[in-house]
Length: 407
Image (cartoon, rainbow, N blue to C red; front, side, top):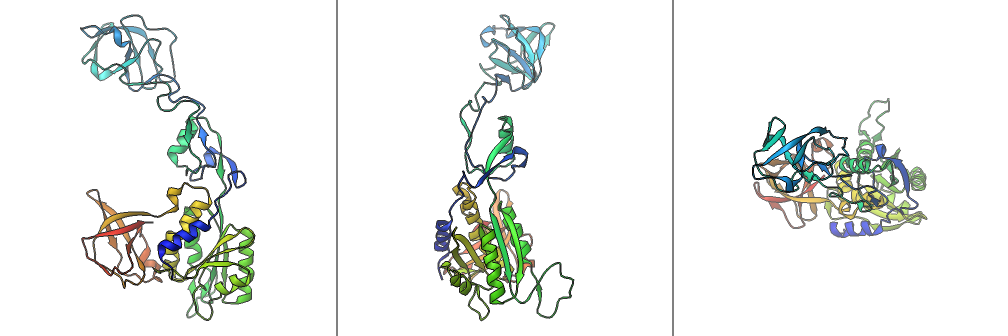
């Protein structure tokens, strides 16, 4: 068994990130949510595009202020999206609204709450500082400056900024194709019309892993389930390898009489880098490279929570590196939290206990579930974090700090 940290390093070293010239596509910005930018984007425009007001108020030339803080009011006004070519006269101010373009000569805005209108004159209740409530042209970013770097996952903020920069189409990495194979005589398809027989179970891993793959920004390719038959499994593995960038099979990766994954991979010329990892749940883990493209193959446990823990701990980061995401996303996010209950482990393997992470008075608090059977997927409903107990760590008392991995 290899330590968790070593397995993580092995996997990430095996991942060959997509080539931005070959493994990319141009899409419309409206389709770009959660996609990964394949090239740096430089702003074509200054932000703001011009000097404009950050408040509803009055624009004026600061040097025109007198001791009595009074200014003449111009007859015109400037709305957002409009401008005036008429420069301000000496000692004059003009009504302006948020986003309105400052007239020639104006360098300061006072908000309307700090003023009183007296006929055609404006009385300032307070003396502002020069440049107050003015957003200068190019203050946020200047034309030609890098706006967003390649490798950025595009969220709402990034998409809004790109829209402001008039980027109608952008170059993004293609989404990786991840094949899923479920193995086991006990598995029954969800859409099967037959009644469950004694010992049979629904193939839930197919759906859970598909959802996790989609969340990771990849395309899930489901190849269904296959019985514990060497010939059938070999054909399906070969088909998956030829079709996908990465393959995940569930079950058949341990050392039982009907666990054929490692044997078949070796027969097909794969190089196996990991056969088991010192993690609980999830010990039987196969990591191999196979085919002309040296695609990554993951043989994960059949128990549903074990499969998901392995995905969260190792595979999610591998997908992130493959599809060009910035390095910060290759690794899980760990925080410290107070556990509400005692946490126990045998200490022989790094142990992951699922539960719910909340914040109480601003501090993270971890509430573990009551049952940690790796076959009990029901217990993981609503879980959003995993408390981690290191090797040789057997006990963390309630109200003490635990390391928690956000999932």
